[in-house]
Image 1 (cartoon, rainbow, N blue to C red):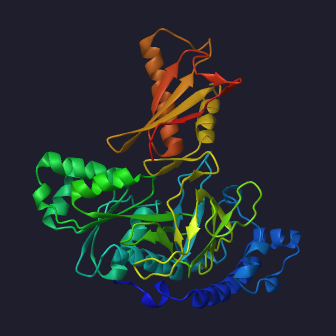
Image 2: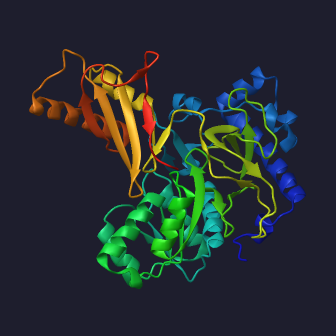
Length: 431
């Protein structure tokens, strides 16, 4: 077995808890001193930084929801002077409000190390060619795996997403060995490689896929069609990006980088901390971040943590693949989409909030349709007028969501209602 940082990845439980405790104590004081939210919320709970002496005291701290981050946009959770920050990354945004995460150079170095652990766990070395097809820019996928690949010493191809023919050309010519992208794009690449007749020229051995939900069936199909081992990776922009946890060769859950992120499972309704092995909402505390040190951040992902012994030799706690969400967020082609975003576009355009989001997966690619009810006054038999209205909504939704749905205008009161309330989301994906 190979490890990027064996002394951490194989540390004993006692050693890790002690390290976490030391880092948590420092981070709590740092957050209290520099972020008004933590000062106010801790005072409300009657807690001071000195009350946090170990990981056991973590539950004394307030939980943090994404709504607070949006309300504090852009600088409300910044804990370092801007002069010490070297980069931002950002979420896709909801109702026009994005979460902007700040990084010092030290933050980026640690994030790169987390991604390096994922690459090495997938069999990566400095002999590999890492083909990064996640998006770059504000999206964390590309920058994260790019930095991790540099840490490992691999030749890094910063391909970004799209332009599939060029992707495959470089994959063949430069003999890429590790592919990093969304699972749906990996499946599309496999299909395109087959249709181009270059399957026997592909040298890939592994793939690191994340940013959207995918099934075990999809994993096996990708592995078969590309001739690789497919590894899962998990992360959130708010916490750092990909590399919060990663899969090893056992493929039975993702190891959490516990020296940087302390995971908890809570009851999403009460906030009560649940025992190891119980299903609930995943919460993370960042204990090494300088610029954006979030504590007890509610991910809204529902999953289970386990400390069962892993054959890879890593002792880092594992999280199973998230089983759903405790809110109404959808992840479509790697983009976070909230029904509230759709409502905002419709209301701004003068439509009633009667709509339905239909998501499916065809040939491993998400399809996304928004059906919108017209009012009787809007209804028209003129095809040209309907088409113009649909295109106007499409343009507005693309600007809001960062992704293009199919927009279909439907007759008044044609969307099924249950007990007077419209069914907002129909997700047909089997994931």
